[in-house]
Length: 460
Ligand code: ZN
Image: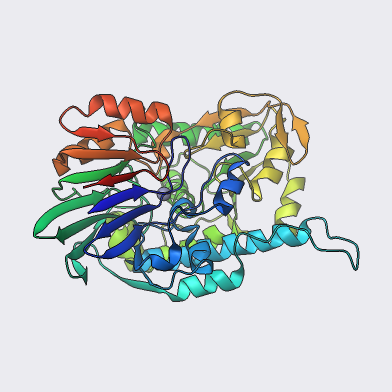
């Protein structure tokens, strides 16, 4: 039995693990590297294995850094099934089609050669056709807690990871040459304070664990304190005539924020007349998927959906699908809460909203999720001013709030508690920056800790 690491290197997000057992080779996730711009080139490089030789893929969840290279895998010869939960299948469809669309759009906007000249523009990493082929190989047959026999000696069980809708940790029960091993992948683990999703389920026992370390060095503020700061920063900003900009991840944070805004109105902490703009076509479609997967939701939110009272609906909520409506928001000088992607402000519509509001001291920017090194979000959070947005420099004068209680990731305490439950004797740390990984490693005393580098291979 062997395990190798082809996605998460230190300081880089992107998850892709290869397992070899009983004559089969399969992947856990096949994510895109995300972070600073240079990493785009790394995505175009080789996988470190032959895609045509992979029998199947198990997908933990629908974030791009976990599913974003599935289309590239198909383009380079993979023809097996992609096994995941139904909710992940539905969300991955949105995410992968959106990524293909952005890639093709970027290419068609790039400098076109004169008529008759060779077109030397770089090929897109993958096309819409590659993406559609990959989506056809999805088999959404995994249900939480129900083992699936994938081959002789390979059984997988998906366990609720509480990170985004449909997300899972995956337990593999492997047998080879009469020897058995329980290998558990955490996937991304959720934050137990989440108001919309159920918390991560207690994990099963395992011999070997591969665990994410996004917040391995930090403790989140309690959720109640984050919600309190959220309400007061909104009220104060709207009170002084500014706008609130919230760079948000489309798949989970946007929906949780709508729920929390709704509760704020019910508790009279927020005015029902406030105007909220959800400027992300993907977040709008994802919001519709939530209503179909009540099995993943907290009982209160699920109950409201069942009684046909949508907990994500607000009196002043506007869904923005079209680009021209998004551009029109540039003329709104105050009184608006604008939620738009991307969450790390590396791309997407939120950059326009930041450009028009970040230098105005009556405005606020509220960050509610993880921001990787090198991203615009991280620069603003770290106090950089001016910041470079869409080709120009802007001084940062708006008030900046970082509410990590809303994080979709477990903090150090959550990771340690989850790990303890597994009782694993050997632990691989992935998916985190160096400091976070070192800090978590120093707290894991009862297990042999490894921090794999890119393409490193281990015998199990
Ligand atoms: Zn994730």
